[in-house]
Image 1 (cartoon, rainbow, N blue to C red):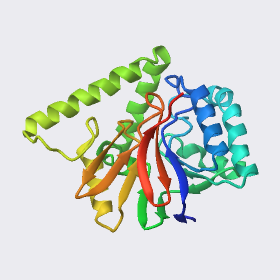
Image 2 (spheres, rainbow, N blue to C red; image 1 turned 45 degrees about the vertical axis):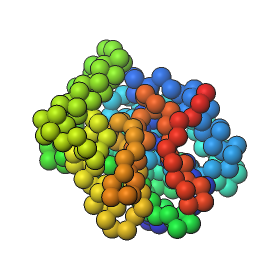
Image 3 (tube, rainbow, N blue to C red; image 1 turned 180 degrees about the vertical axis):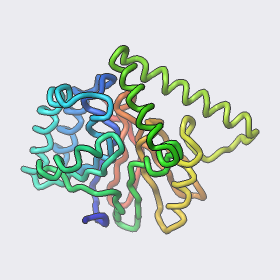
Length: 247
């Protein structure tokens, strides 16, 4: 299984959640993939590009044809599309292999010049997901029920998580917490431990809370979710940055 790659021109996105009732960005996703292919970027989808956990195969089948057309453009140009499996698309892993459009990986160690970057979806560092998997699955399906009733429930929940994050900072009376507001502390702690293993940067998805923070003069990025933002990480010739694609 391929996990170590060398790339001088790579774009990383995550959490597109195509098929999810809260996904209103299909057009933007298609346009962005076309932009990446036109500009000869290789691509990494860092988990949850497709969402089967909170939708149906019928809805998903309606969403993906235009997206797959863009993936085929990458293949025709001999550009690579890496797919790191996330918790919302685990069940599709064998389908991905059959489609033969992606290079599948549980994580990626990316080298670009002198830069070393670890790319992981991040769900394995979510304490709720790891400690209570059955309850997490139930909560995911309950959230899916509310999303089908009103897709705006998603933005309400993301706002609620941010409020919890601010309250967590206030409770601990720490003014300079290293982490992205809204994320569980276990996520940034995992990023710190990975950076200690010799990486210059870590890129997660999963939490849907986008941002970048310095950890001991190294970088932790989260690309967030295209349900809210059109953010991506760009790696070019040993330089890494978090960017917002303008439409």
